[in-house]
Image (cartoon, rainbow, N blue to C red; front, side):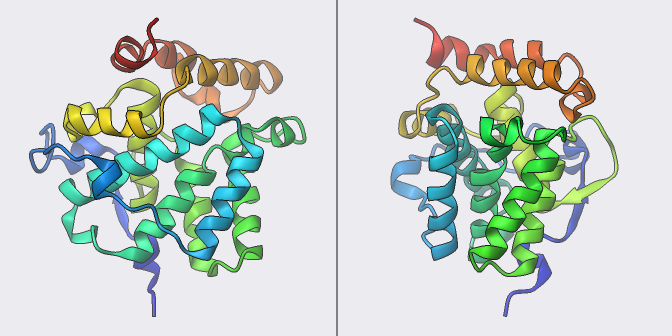
Length: 240
């Protein structure tokens, strides 16, 4: 029987530099061809969430949601190998990835005055419970979505929350690239191309802040320019 910890409910420092003890990584990354080495979970609840995300999100966001799964799975395997074979945790992480940006969809963005990450947590939790997910799993996903933009605070966070933070920062801002080999990143983007993700996401942030000037996205200092300044991915995968 799964325990709360299997769903990522254990505390880790929010400050990732603290977790790394001042290093660039805990273990030197090695190249991974994710198409061959990483299997996306295939449980009924994951399939339902994948279909839900595909129906609600544009291709750019759908692909981003998959990239962060593959980044995170490799980071877990290489930096936190004690969790690499925990199928429950990896399924929970996959669900978090698939649904972390669900409320960026117009249907949800314009139906509430709440910040997209907060409202998205409620949407995801309700969907997962209705799809038959255990409450601990639905709660873990919602917690991760709620916290995935808490990038400038101290304290603690769940393991799932930490990994979704890290991987969205990788994909959106080009941060924490030292956690993966360049060949691994290339294999992820080959499998799920960016499709101009930098422009897509920066436009969304601008739109949300314009519509909801109180939104949580304003807590990230100079957020739009941070996204637009993602030189690593722009130069390699989005330049003409």
